[in-house]
Length: 211
Image: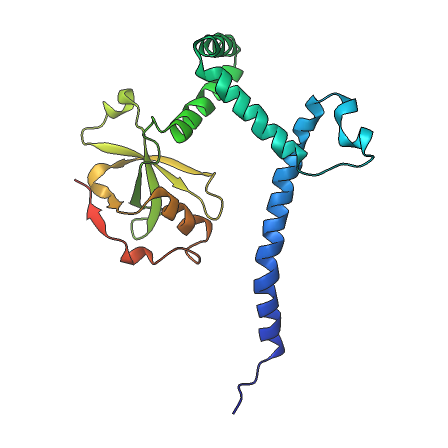
């Protein structure tokens, strides 16, 4: 006997197809629209609206990539490095701005250059109460703060779900965390998807108790 499919099942099946597609298109449209703002740097006669009579989406993406590439090439040589240091020295003298800029730059240097220690390990920590576990990333702990602890502590960033750009920054005793043998990328997939689209189950991941 053929299984009867309800109207609700058809609706859910349709949503499972269209919702991810719609969100993907929306995110891409947001990114392209934001990058297209770089076209404002060009003279008006260079814009496609002037000589084509219409706006061509995506040109800002290409312009952004070109600007980033040229900046990287320029900053990689000796003269460029000196100018960058000179420019950063000026920014460091601006009150309030220098605090924000310095903090953001330290994070970006650590994430993109591969020289920092941020987000190098994935941990399990007790949060938000002693009977719960949360995914966290080990980050740097300032030496001046570490000196105040009688036992070894680690600095952890606990991201929120489904937006991992926000979260909490804590200092946790080393022997109170569990170090996971999974990559940062996999951990981000767990967090962003709330465990639904993660490649495997968290309890299947091998763990080692931190020493």
